[in-house]
Image 1 (cartoon, helix red, strand yellow):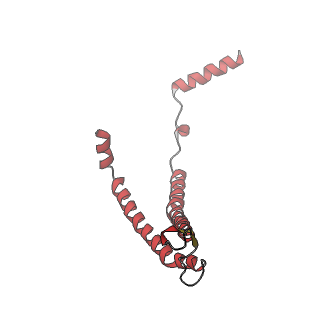
Image 2 (tube, rainbow, N blue to C red):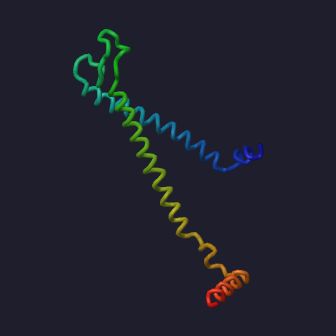
Image 3 (cartoon, rainbow, N blue to C red):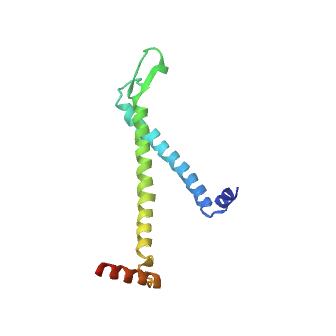
Length: 131
């Protein structure tokens, strides 16, 4: 129960909630783009007239048997647009900020003075190598 309390009390929980809300809104935006712009373009490739779009019908007089290839292509395009925006708007800036922070981080224990124990160990090893 303590772990759950610690999780809830962390400051990044609000950031996570905001990210989920923005992600949902962005998904709706990309969905609307593909439905209103990409779908008609793909459907026009399926033929003219009363065509249902890019695909084929298994049973000619049953509209429920239409295999919608255009819908599948639209889903792929939606996924690629969403993934590209997430990558270029979130992942790339995060990696650059992380690299910048790591570059400006103070040096690790390498600059710390050696302890007496470390020095004695080095002396012992040198004496062993000479013998």
